[in-house]
Length: 234
Image (cartoon, rainbow, N blue to C red; front, side):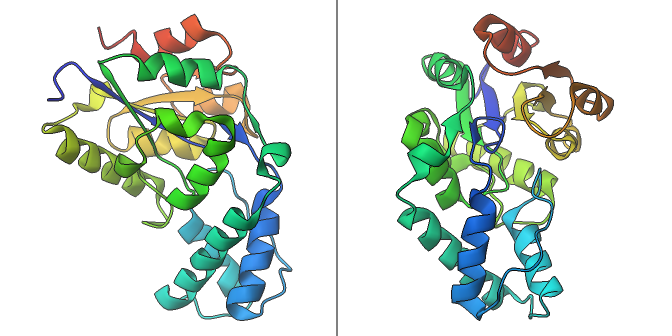
């Protein structure tokens, strides 16, 4: 049952982990192998979904953006991530993340999953080198293969969580955590709680102006983070 439980939905990149540079590398390999495209254009990544990024890359390189062509890129992205044996060295967990996720995982009143622009397979690749994957229920997340629009991912994650846990999660008990205004907008679209962390490319002011209910400098202060995530849901 979901009574008195809080659903926490984490973004991945620059919220939980930093893998700056891997996106360009993996897309370069994926486009070449899927469609023989040499990467000449890099889109903006922050807060966007893999579906939006892939369609843009195919379009600007003059290629068909149909579902079959996108699926081929996705398959090669997954293969590139799985073949990258340097992930633990190329990335890092952000300050406080492991402690915070472990603390929440030990609570009976919290369910943790993801709302991320990543494909689910890429999210697992990025979290597993640091042991963060064991705290996350990947089966109820919202992922970047679903839609170009972030709010669709939030809706999908909530629906999956409600099916698994046998009842509704009221929106005031759904907490979306991310580092971009797009993360905030995705939460607010559904009336969910938006917690922003200024660990990415958006400033604390930009995140506050986007309507976040709380803005944290990072997740290093356990008590501060717990208060932001849970204090309004006593």
